[in-house]
Amino acid sequence: MTSTPVLTPLKIERGLHGLQGIAACLVEGGPRFDEKVHCWVVTLSLHRDVGARFVGTSTRWCVLIDGSYPFGPISFYPAAEGGITATFPHQRKNTAGRERRGWRGGKLCLDSPFGDERRVTVVRDPVGDVDARLRWHVERAMAWLQHAANDQLLAEGEPFELPERPHTIVREWERHLVVHDETATSFAAWSGRERSFGRARFGAVTDIGGALGVSRFEDQQGITIRTWAGRELGDLGKGYVNGFWWLLPKPIVLLPWQAPGTWGELRRIAKAMGLETDAMLRWLFPSIRGAKARSVLLLGYPVPLRVGASPSEVHWDALLLPCLNEAAGKPPSGFRPNARGWWHRDRFGKFADNVPLEYLYLENWSPQRLQARGRLPSAVRDLRIALLGVGALGSLLAEMLVRAGVTDIALVDDDRVDAGNVCRHVATLVDVRKGKVQVVAQRLRQISPAVRVVEVSKALCGDAKTIVERLDPYDVVIECTASDEAVTLLATGWWSIPRVFASFSLGYGGKRLFSFGVSGHEFPQQEFTSNVRLWIEHEAATWANSEEVLEGAGCWSPLFPARYDDVVMAAATCVKELETLVAQRPRAPRFRVFAQTASDDGFQGFVPEAIPPTVEAKAP
Image (cartoon, rainbow, N blue to C red):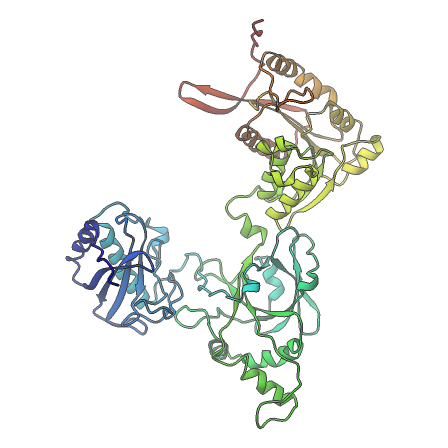
């Protein structure tokens, strides 16, 4: 059967025409349409006057161009014949293509800065420009080659880059993720332990399926080096993992910048550092022979935050080790059934030089990593917070605080999730009829492996002594119940150590937020009531003059209307207010009202409001 020829898009032809002025670029073939990758492939060669160790004077490339050019991706791959074979920084691992498509796996990272560009230029792919876009990519590839040949792809001061590691194809481990929490602080625990190895203990990161946390590192004598800093890890049960670690003194790479892919490559890298991989394996083998549990080896090395800086953290990779049979049966020909025979069987069998390394998915889940994009100041993060009420506002506030770094929080609420709550709560329909505290606590644990949540699935109650004892461990008490009873009970307590008290509640329709806060030994109910009285009257009048909101037929129960986006905005304002209360620690009560404002141009923001506006009576 003959396939119908595919005509080259005119815009790609125009893009190729734009390459004619580049003397060092020669288009050798194409464009041809590759049905397997659904894009156009152009083969070209790039020429340089001087060759280098890993880069010749002429290199061949396959350029993959999306059919929507000048939009869509453009990818540069080394050609299978005549292309570079080494892996450099700012490049995917440059392995030989398995499917013989004409190119290798080492795609160049051309749309991100390399060399010293990060600090002085902004890299912008001219997407949409028919004549310039393909030329831009070719010129970027030529610049990349120049930097690669001169060993200048990693410039001093730019963020340190790790080499790409291939991940295991063992199906039973695809859903697993190994996590650790190394930081600059924990780096001191590894001082003097480079070139050493020992045991690693694993536990389940509760409420995060498939996540295996490194709970403890031990030396060969069983002495603890460091432990997991987050919340307590759970028992793996039948999923027990036999863990080990090996810390090398430098990055584990084949020059110029390729992670090892086989046990032989790992042996070569270690030997260049004066280490023998087999010495570590001789110690490790007796622990994994005949073991029912799978075994994981953590390979680590110190890394800096930026190129040229001193190392400040340990980076780990995780290898799934082959299973070894017990030291029994028939050893290899010529060897007796003794330690030497079993070593020879395993070393030159499942750990032979040509056996691929099975990399597992691994991530650093330290708070510094997870919250690098945005976190609260330590003065707030380090507080122990009790949150009374985890309804719409309280649940979102709890989530925002934990996402921003709070790690110690208690949730107090006796309510359950109704289907109608889902439109403005962190809960989903899967959570209907579950306790709100249970639902929110689970969500918080899924957000942060460091958070410790105390669950109290009943309302605040009891005498003054009981309330004081229950809330005594906390530096901040936040009331989000919108309940007079909760405020009254809270006011009965007196604490010897001052703390921050805050009360946050929504106005009708979520159009206002009422914020009350103070630092002291007790919650001042009288001042709170006097501040909110006029506003409560205003809210009551607003509600009375509005149409009732009902879910449907049933027991008469008008609903409090408020959209999710309004509640989110209010919760974000609560976080800002809490920051201010913690920073100022006001001894005199601080009361503020925030109201949504709008103009002919639309929504203007959430701004402070001094006095309640007049409410017009509803027409009869």
